Amino acid sequence: MVIDLELTPKTKRPPGVACCEPVVYPDVERGQAVRMAAIAKALGDPVRLQLVDVLRKHAGKVCVCELVPLFELSQPTVSHHLKVLRQAGIVGSEREGLWAYYYVIPDALKELSEWLS
Amino acid sequence: MVIDLELTPKTKRPPGVACCEPVVYPDVERGQAVRMAAIAKALGDPVRLQLVDVLRKHAGKVCVCELVPLFELSQPTVSHHLKVLRQAGIVGSEREGLWAYYYVIPDALKELSEWLS
DNA sequence: GCTCCAGATCGATCACCATCGATATACAAA
DNA sequence: TTTGTATATCGATGGTGATCGATCTGGAGC
Image (cartoon, rainbow over all chains, first blue to last red; front, side):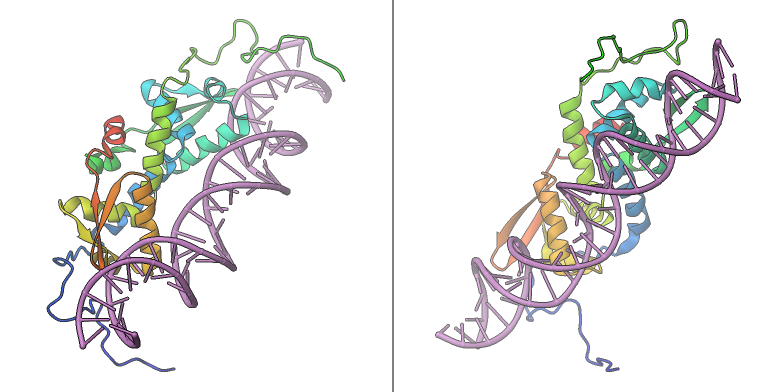
């Protein structure tokens, strides 16, 4: 194994020439970026965004049987999107007999919302 | 071929039994959902979200040569992420000689931000 | 018990995406 | 004009995602 002992600085630029002031923003917010990107990714589908929109406008829980006919999609597909939202921590669900109800989890979108504004 | 002449309404539920009040939220915001989901999708990657974060904290434009060393990624990969952000309308770019500079487009995140809050 | 229904899961398919090395482009300097 | 440098693009690859029909699950009612 050969080890390169030469210094290989990250900013290798001819002396006296610079494109701009150095930015120097290290991974201070790496974890936060991963968290917020996961939320944004879950919202990055029109169907899921509309699902969240409907659930947010209904302060309480909403039955899946009301959500499926809102889209021209099969029931398994809507169920899949709800699962993605649940795994992202954006919505929660509970069963009552035959029916299943979904609701938004308060403050789930808070971090991303505050970063955006 | 047998054609089912019976009516098969979308809400086929035993009379007098209902899972919930009807929601009845049609595609009022379909176009808006598509637009905002496209923005959220572009932000749905930690690298791209951090790129936007850096650009937002620098009111002016930032050189690509400063952005690449912030991530442990190849230069083509960072360039790809910047292209995704540009195609989503979140950032803009301009060239000055050898160097390229990127900047956030004001109000690009406005619609999504307002919907989230 | 059996049947019916709402919803979730499975399996397959097709499309898209993140990443890289290699190469192209376009400009600068010698 | 030749060389070097910054960035973009290309092509390939492995992984992920959206969608559907079919099937499973578990509760309700007969």
